[in-house]
Length: 381
Image (tube, rainbow, N blue to C red; front, side, top):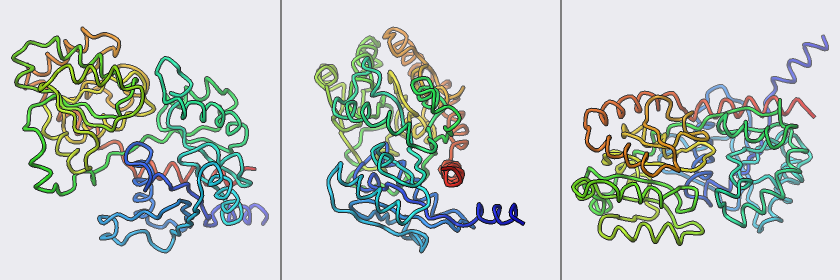
């Protein structure tokens, strides 16, 4: 009888708290993860859990609203405070109102929570000074993650490489870490505004996407691109999409050195980005280190021929459906770009294979593993 009651208790619907600030406050990266998680949770059938969404501003999406939006299982809890006070107030509210808490954008909330807490581990880049992480973020994460490792009930890593980095640096996280690979985003291919479409380059360019920061390795990409034959550069200009990040001096100098051969678009809409993935001849992502590498998956889903690094999590994403190069080897990067640009057959073959592989990554699966991890965490204390 006791076992039956315990089993029934374990199956009872939970109230799950989520740090959902990223949905409205972060355009790409972690913001996309939160938005896609909310969409996937809303689409789950027979899910009786309730979700308290802690943020400063509520998020809404026209496409999601047309499908019914976030239903009665979801409730926004808005807290008008700056960091770090926001985390204290959110943790206190979550501890009163929820059974378990998903820290989707900070380790600090885990410090204050008095209920089981599960931080998402995106990467450990801030602990690798060679990758020149954002200084402010590096300081904050180096301070906040060690106590979070002691307090968290479980962890959700977005790749096996990230899980390995976490347990290598913090062995006590071993046995508490689940891997939930990120998903392909079909909603990325929205209707493109004709006015914006007219500003995009004609098909056939070499595309790179990502925040302009040192680990994206754009100076080496530029050096490799510059080493191509002049005819290839003339017919396949370099197009770079991404907001300006930090320590951009060397990156911007390299990009500007190409003159008219490089187009820097900054941050663009999801629909425009999807169109660029479709139009590009080759997508290049020679990053020095990634927790997952979402732009690689997005490009694969669009059927692009992808060249990426053979390090960190990127082979988990690309599998045998992309081309690889050592990100520190300029000649190797150049040779792969040249090989792809001069072989339409290889590009087509890679693009078809990439599109097929991308279907293996789904936000529904990410949401499922997230919920299962939260359910297990709620039964521990």
